[in-house]
Amino acid sequence: QVQLVESGGGLVQAGGSLRLSCAASGSIFSINTMGWYRQAPGKQREMVAVITSGGVTNYADSVKGRFTISRDNAKNTVNLQMNSLKPEDTAVYYCSLAPLLGPVSNYWGQGTQVTVSS
Image (cartoon, rainbow, N blue to C red; front, side, top):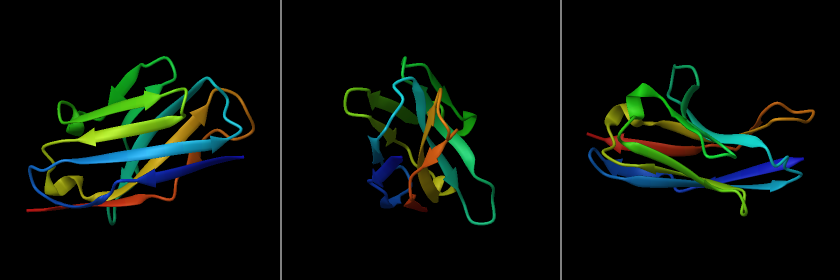
């Protein structure tokens, strides 16, 4: 079983910054992809940024140049530095972990609220 615990959400004014962190624990297959997804009210969950255990990253077009994802494989943590935040970034942000192998294709955190005021 894998547990993901997020922290760092909150309320910020447009143009501000927030840093999200996620710590994974449990039986974690070493080759995996960790990342952040978000879901705004009335919208589907969407990928924000992901990073493989090898360090390859992928970002949604809407956050490129503003958000940076990083991870520490030794600590099983993933962070999301969010700069130049916009009101449209308001959503619940979920940490995810997708192991290459194993019975579960994707684990999710409980979510953390990010609210950007205009």
